[in-house]
Length: 226
Image 1 (tube, rainbow, N blue to C red):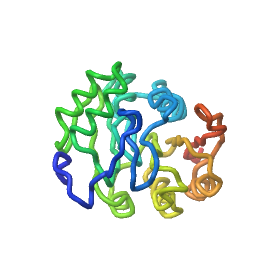
Image 2 (cartoon, one colour; image 1 turned 30 degrees about the horizontal axis):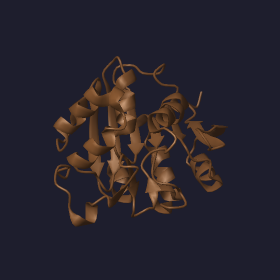
Image 3 (cartoon, helix red, strand yellow; image 1 turned 90 degrees about the horizontal axis):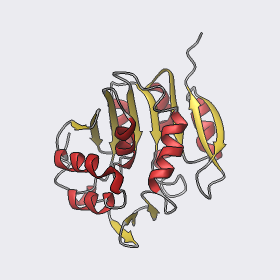
Image 4 (cartoon, helix red, strand yellow; image 1 turned 30 degrees about the vertical axis):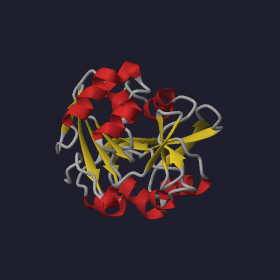
């Protein structure tokens, strides 16, 4: 794994800051979290969408496309009461100072955020009950090489309209192949081509009310075959 603590020009996240505290990717022209409340959106979409924390058991494995500010990790760590794992795929990691600026928007997560920043750059990091690994690089390369299988996926790349490569049929197939039987996914998008790609990848896909101004989001499950 590359050293997260040292950014390279090709891995620079290229940030602007809205209202001083909300990071916006100038590469994809998209904010890292909802302007209407990032933590509330994470809880609605990724936690409730995957029926968490009810499903959490020791060793439960969450995988994520798009680590970003680490907000989803922090929200997960806040509710996890047993040891679990998380693997997150990220092409453009933030530096510690950028993470600190983003984390200031979520004071109730301050203790967990400080844990994350203190370990940033390690191959594996402990945040609360979550042992996390951030896999750096192009997900089209890193995800096929991953040997794990997730019990739940947080599909949180930038908007499909802004970052279509992250939501391609090929990537969604890889998500399906790296999902345990009975595993789930949740994502804020209800774009038709994403839903169809996830269905082709083997998931049963449902639409639910979205967060804030978003009418819909998507959730799904990998059938157990029984």
